[in-house]
Length: 145
Ligand SMILES: [Zn+2]
Ligand SMILES: [Zn+2]
Image: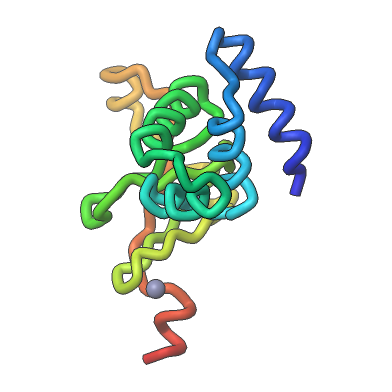
Protein backbone atom coordinates (compact mmCIF):
# COMPACT_ATOMS: atom_id res chain seq x y z
CA UNK A 1 0.00 0.00 0.00
CA UNK A 2 1.04 3.59 -0.54
CA UNK A 3 0.37 4.68 3.00
CA UNK A 4 3.00 7.40 3.13
CA UNK A 5 2.01 8.80 -0.22
CA UNK A 6 -1.62 8.91 0.82
CA UNK A 7 -0.83 10.66 4.07
CA UNK A 8 1.04 13.34 2.16
CA UNK A 9 -1.92 13.58 -0.19
CA UNK A 10 -4.26 13.85 2.77
CA UNK A 11 -2.26 16.75 4.20
CA UNK A 12 -2.08 18.51 0.85
CA UNK A 13 -5.75 18.08 0.08
CA UNK A 14 -6.78 19.33 3.50
CA UNK A 15 -4.55 22.38 3.19
CA UNK A 16 -5.79 23.08 -0.33
CA UNK A 17 -9.32 23.17 1.06
CA UNK A 18 -8.34 25.32 4.00
CA UNK A 19 -8.93 22.52 6.48
CA UNK A 20 -6.97 22.15 9.64
CA UNK A 21 -4.56 19.24 9.63
CA UNK A 22 -4.46 18.02 13.18
CA UNK A 23 -2.54 15.00 14.50
CA UNK A 24 -5.88 13.44 15.44
CA UNK A 25 -7.25 13.81 11.94
CA UNK A 26 -4.11 12.31 10.47
CA UNK A 27 -4.32 9.41 12.88
CA UNK A 28 -7.93 8.80 11.86
CA UNK A 29 -7.09 8.93 8.18
CA UNK A 30 -4.04 6.74 8.60
CA UNK A 31 -5.93 4.12 10.59
CA UNK A 32 -8.71 3.96 8.00
CA UNK A 33 -6.12 3.68 5.26
CA UNK A 34 -4.14 0.88 6.93
CA UNK A 35 -7.29 -1.04 7.83
CA UNK A 36 -7.66 -1.43 4.10
CA UNK A 37 -11.36 -1.88 4.37
CA UNK A 38 -14.68 -0.31 5.14
CA UNK A 39 -15.15 0.89 8.69
CA UNK A 40 -18.05 2.48 10.50
CA UNK A 41 -17.23 5.56 12.61
CA UNK A 42 -17.59 3.39 15.73
CA UNK A 43 -15.23 0.72 14.43
CA UNK A 44 -12.70 3.36 13.48
CA UNK A 45 -13.10 5.03 16.85
CA UNK A 46 -12.33 1.77 18.63
CA UNK A 47 -9.13 1.42 16.63
CA UNK A 48 -7.80 4.97 17.10
CA UNK A 49 -8.67 4.87 20.79
CA UNK A 50 -5.86 2.35 21.19
CA UNK A 51 -3.34 5.04 20.27
CA UNK A 52 -5.14 8.07 21.66
CA UNK A 53 -7.35 7.11 24.59
CA UNK A 54 -8.69 10.65 24.93
CA UNK A 55 -10.02 10.94 21.38
CA UNK A 56 -13.81 11.25 21.16
CA UNK A 57 -16.30 9.57 18.87
CA UNK A 58 -17.49 13.04 17.84
CA UNK A 59 -13.97 13.85 16.62
CA UNK A 60 -14.00 10.74 14.45
CA UNK A 61 -17.42 11.62 12.99
CA UNK A 62 -16.32 15.17 12.29
CA UNK A 63 -13.06 14.09 10.67
CA UNK A 64 -14.89 11.61 8.42
CA UNK A 65 -17.37 14.32 7.42
CA UNK A 66 -14.54 16.67 6.56
CA UNK A 67 -12.64 14.01 4.60
CA UNK A 68 -15.79 13.03 2.78
CA UNK A 69 -16.54 16.62 1.79
CA UNK A 70 -13.19 16.88 0.00
CA UNK A 71 -13.37 13.36 -1.42
CA UNK A 72 -10.52 11.94 0.62
CA UNK A 73 -12.75 9.10 1.67
CA UNK A 74 -15.71 7.31 0.14
CA UNK A 75 -18.85 6.29 1.96
CA UNK A 76 -20.84 3.09 1.61
CA UNK A 77 -24.41 2.95 2.79
CA UNK A 78 -27.08 0.32 2.37
CA UNK A 79 -30.63 -0.11 3.57
CA UNK A 80 -29.87 -2.94 5.94
CA UNK A 81 -26.60 -1.49 7.21
CA UNK A 82 -26.73 -0.22 10.75
CA UNK A 83 -24.21 2.48 9.91
CA UNK A 84 -22.40 4.14 7.05
CA UNK A 85 -19.01 2.68 6.23
CA UNK A 86 -15.98 4.66 5.11
CA UNK A 87 -12.92 3.79 3.07
CA UNK A 88 -9.92 5.62 1.68
CA UNK A 89 -10.23 3.77 -1.61
CA UNK A 90 -11.78 6.48 -3.77
CA UNK A 91 -11.18 4.68 -7.06
CA UNK A 92 -14.34 3.79 -8.92
CA UNK A 93 -15.50 0.38 -7.77
CA UNK A 94 -18.54 -1.58 -6.73
CA UNK A 95 -19.44 -3.51 -3.59
CA UNK A 96 -20.85 -6.78 -2.47
CA UNK A 97 -22.55 -6.62 0.88
CA UNK A 98 -22.99 -9.87 2.76
CA UNK A 99 -26.54 -10.35 3.99
CA UNK A 100 -25.38 -12.41 6.94
CA UNK A 101 -22.36 -10.62 8.38
CA UNK A 102 -22.55 -7.24 6.59
CA UNK A 103 -19.00 -7.66 5.33
CA UNK A 104 -18.31 -5.34 2.42
CA UNK A 105 -16.13 -6.60 -0.41
CA UNK A 106 -14.73 -4.37 -3.13
CA UNK A 107 -15.71 -5.47 -6.59
CA UNK A 108 -13.79 -4.42 -9.67
CA UNK A 109 -15.48 -5.42 -12.88
CA UNK A 110 -15.24 -4.04 -16.38
CA UNK A 111 -18.56 -5.66 -17.09
CA UNK A 112 -20.26 -3.72 -14.32
CA UNK A 113 -18.50 -0.52 -15.39
CA UNK A 114 -20.06 -0.57 -18.84
CA UNK A 115 -23.62 -0.62 -17.60
CA UNK A 116 -25.77 1.16 -20.15
CA UNK A 117 -27.66 4.00 -18.58
CA UNK A 118 -30.96 4.42 -20.41
CA UNK A 119 -31.16 7.43 -22.69
CA UNK A 120 -34.33 8.64 -20.98
CA UNK A 121 -32.55 8.90 -17.64
CA UNK A 122 -29.63 10.77 -19.15
CA UNK A 123 -32.10 13.31 -20.53
CA UNK A 124 -33.94 13.64 -17.27
CA UNK A 125 -31.03 13.82 -14.84
CA UNK A 126 -27.51 15.10 -14.79
CA UNK A 127 -25.94 11.75 -14.03
CA UNK A 128 -22.42 12.00 -12.71
CA UNK A 129 -21.69 8.39 -11.97
CA UNK A 130 -22.94 5.14 -10.54
CA UNK A 131 -21.81 2.25 -8.46
CA UNK A 132 -23.44 -1.10 -8.07
CA UNK A 133 -24.16 -2.74 -4.77
CA UNK A 134 -24.54 -6.47 -4.98
CA UNK A 135 -26.13 -8.43 -2.19
CA UNK A 136 -25.27 -11.96 -1.32
CA UNK A 137 -23.40 -14.21 1.04
CA UNK A 138 -19.65 -13.73 1.38
CA UNK A 139 -17.10 -16.52 1.03
CA UNK A 140 -16.48 -16.69 4.76
CA UNK A 141 -20.16 -17.14 5.60
CA UNK A 142 -20.53 -19.75 2.87
CA UNK A 143 -17.71 -21.82 4.31
CA UNK A 144 -18.96 -21.72 7.90
CA UNK A 145 -22.39 -22.99 7.01
ZN1 LIG B 1 -20.62 -12.81 5.41
ZN1 LIG C 1 -14.99 -0.18 -1.31
